[in-house]
Amino acid sequence: MTTLLEIRDLRIEGRAGDDWLPIVKGVDLTLQRGEVLGLIGESGAGKSTLGLAAMGFVRDGCRISGGSIRFDGTELADAPESVRRGLRGKRIAYVAQSAAASFNPAHRLMDQHCEAPVIHGVRGRAEAQADGVELYRRMRLPDPEAIGFRYPHQVSGGQLQRAMTAMAMACRPDLIIFDEPTTALDVTTQIEVLASIRDAVQQFGTAAIYITHDLAVVAQMADRIKVLLRGEEVEESDTRSMLVAPRAEYTRSLWAVRRLERVERPAAETRPVLSVRNVTAGYGALTVLKDVSFDLHPGETVAVVGESGSGKSTTARVITGLLPPKRGKILFEGEALPADYRGRSRDQLRQVQMIYQSADTALNPKLSLRELIGRPAQMYLGLQGAALEERVRELLSLIELEPGKFIDRKPGELSGGQKQRVGIARALAADPKVIICDEVTSALDQIVQEGILRLLDRLQRELGLAYMFITHDLATVKVIADRVVVMQQGRVVEQGPKAEMFAPPHHPYTELLLSSVPEMDPDWLSRLLRDRAVGAA
Image 1 (cartoon, rainbow, N blue to C red):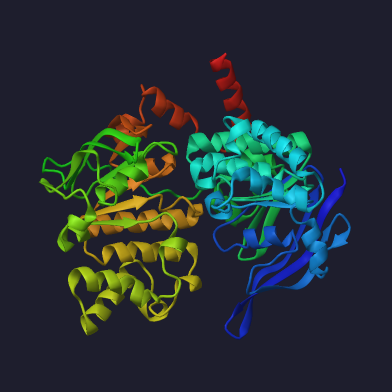
Image 2 (image 1 turned 90 degrees about the vertical axis):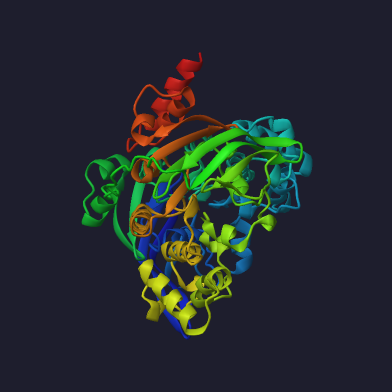
């Protein structure tokens, strides 16, 4: 193999007021043609910054302050922008973490797919469109001849992620940077996307940098793994050696992150704090939820699991009154809540709060933490002046952020884990009895995940909160849940105490979910796909 990408002593800085602070600190990287390199490390390690630098690109507020980036003999660190633009999309492509945020919602998938090959002169429109259909077929997308003529909102998250990978392949690039491409996907969809990505990379001999915080996923994808910590390289070796015998203490700590050891709390004999009763709901003529029922008791965590499109988040919308059901009702402490949130009293509204998956989009970037946390306390509890200030500081302390350092910061000055803690504080500010946690750890690395789960567990014990925990991460379910509700195609197919749900025999769909959780074994994905093919035959 020949060298495609060579990075030497790369240093990247970010602006902080009038100062420049180091982000990447003298990192080296070599990638051969057709090779896949995994970049891992906790939040803030510099993974995405290094991946983007492989394209000769840095985000706003950042600069390359030293080092070399040679792509197939071309120096990108100081190349004219016209040279770098000529490579991006044609010979170097990028697949982002959130396909939903990356596609233009006003244009059909096929129009966006054809843009790069047409602009770069690789193919004409008709040829690019025909090739797009073939790539959709290779990516195992349903109805490949027609799916490209849908808008982004008309396909599922997993389908959109595969469409983005097909778009990255449109010019048959030499290098693709995959930046957490399966983080927000459920386990069954993740299997499809991983298999599609791996097949496409192998079929076209494309080199790849695969950025992730999921160690089991990188084990399936990478030939070699490089570990980063605070902008510096910790170690690098081939995948099998890294998994069996990591040399650095930090890498060993990633491999063995201690999960929260939580004592399962059986449902109390008291009445439920929240009940979903025979709810059927949907959007227009489309029915999404079909006769859904379950209870949530005080101080209990009920995990709601299922693949994308199973109805988990729609259930949360019904509970909060954002989507009135067609049939059924929501009970709070035995009393039926008005179906539409606009008919609920302020006290009813404050009792059920949400923590959202993406703190980046849930927090107003223009407001300080004082304002973000203070507004719900002011609205629901009527706090003003010194009492409001005291409550905001109390909540910051509760989420383990020092008030003196953080109260005047804005979201852009926080890490991903800190932003999620602010989301928790904002929900707590209303003094609720029920909190709906919607995929709150899915975009976080293992170390930050553990901190958030420990925080949620401590708050639950101290404040007696009840959690409805929506997630596709079954490892998280094993950690935090008391009971589990499994949803498929808008129905509850199985529910019960966690110990029963994870012990065989399982409902066939539950068995499918459990078997789809990646293992720290480089052969796991190949073995799973082979076994399923044999089973299907």
